[in-house]
Image (cartoon, rainbow, N blue to C red; front, side, top):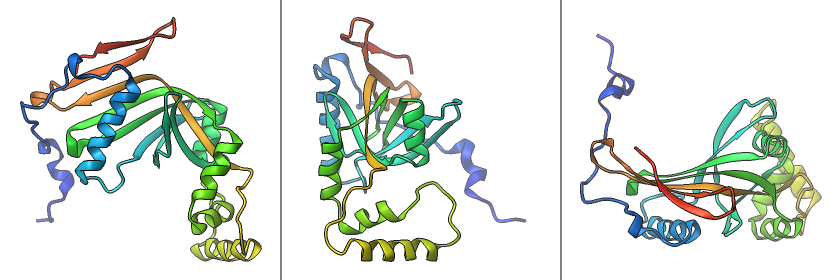
Length: 220
């Protein structure tokens, strides 16, 4: 008989959640930002995630074809969530052509996740310059050398582009014009806490038509 695969066990894969866990309206901070920072602190302090600032970014092209990938959160304030990328990449062209996105912070190790939806805007050149200058030299070189999301003939082609770029910039590496930051400006921020029997707690901050934030509980 053939060896079994993990896929054969997919219907039975499930994780029970502790009945002691829960998220009540009284537990929430006054703002989505304060609540997110509380949970991010918990994730970092737990030491259980290799990259606690990793988030899934979902975008759609101008003709509404969706795509998703994992990126790193690199800035956070009341305006929203910031990441940096090659603006000519798949995600960059999506975000500029159809400036709406969703984010998922998958913190299942802590039985939590955060889901964000909102509009997208470019961050200022000054902020992009400052962050680029803080990156390791290798990452700066890679930002110039890699034509992100486009086919290349081989790994050697990429390595040669990095070598040539390093020679081109022996000292300071300037930020490429096609590289910069994007900010997801939240319209909804949902905090999800795992509960038994898949009856999870879902509390969402939502900006209403008047621009005020309201909190609502969603059915699991």
